[in-house]
Image (cartoon, rainbow, N blue to C red; front, top):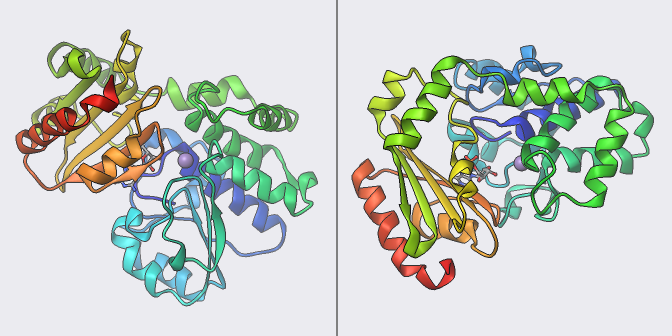
Length: 315
Ligand code: 5GP
Ligand code: MN
C-alpha cells in the first residue's frame, strides 16, 4: 500500500490478505509508514508491519515472497523509503490500483483502472472473478466496505456506479455493521482535531473568487500547538468545496520532510494534471496530492502563480 495509507489502501490490503490466507497462502501486509489510529479496528491491522519501524522484518518477508501485490498506488516512489526494496525485489509483482498514469514497467501483471471507485472495489472484482464469492466473509467485507465509502465520499463521487452500490449491498449481506464502520472512520477523532479545524477555517483559509478557488495553508506551528497526528487532517481539504462556486480546493501542510499538498475539484478541473505539473504529484481527476521542498511561503506563491496560468480552466 502507499505511504500514510488511507482506508482504501489499508482496507484493500487487509481484505486481499484475508482472502489469500483462506486459500492457504502465507501473507505479510506491509505499510511503508505509520497510519491513522482509526484504521486499527480493521481485522488484521494488528499484524501489519510498518516499514519505517520494522524494516528488517518487512525486508525478510519481501525476500521470501513469491508474489507481491501493490495496492492503491502505481509507482514505487509512493511507498517512500520502501521504494528501492520494491524495485529490487525479484518476485512477481502484481498491480491493483485506480490512479492515473501507472508505471507499468515496474509490474509483471495488473490493472490500474481509473474508472474504478476504489482499490477495494478492484479487490472485490478480483475475488469474484476468481470464482470465490463464497469466500467473502464478514472480515473481508468490513475491510472492503471501509475503502469503498472512503474513496466514494460515502457514495457521492462520480465513480459511484451501479456496480458500487451492488457491491455495497453484497458486502452488507455478509453481516457487516455499516453504520459502525462509517462512525469508526469519520467520528473517531479527538477534541483537538475539531478545535484545530475551527482555527484553520478562521485563520488559514483564503478564497480566490476570481479563480473559483480556496486555499488552506497550515504552518508547522499549528500542527504542534493542536497536537495534530497522522490522519487528523484527512478530509479537511474537502470543506471549502461546500462554498457556492468553488471548483478547486487546495490544502498545504508544512511537514518536517516537505510541504504536502492536497487538491480536490468539482466539475472539469483536472487535479491530477495540476499536481503533476506544479507539485511533483498526481492522483485522480478530482483528487490529487503532491509535495514540495520549497518553504511554505514559496510553495504558496507558486500555487498562486499556477492559478493565474490556469485561469481559463477554472472558470
Ligand atoms: P490526499 O490528498 O488524500 O493525500 O491524496 C489524494 C489522492 O492523490 C490519493 O488518491 C493519493 O493516493 C494521491 N496522491 C497524494 N499525494 C500524491 C503524490 O505525492 N503523488 C501522487 N502520484 N499521488 C498522490
Ligand atoms: Mn484509493
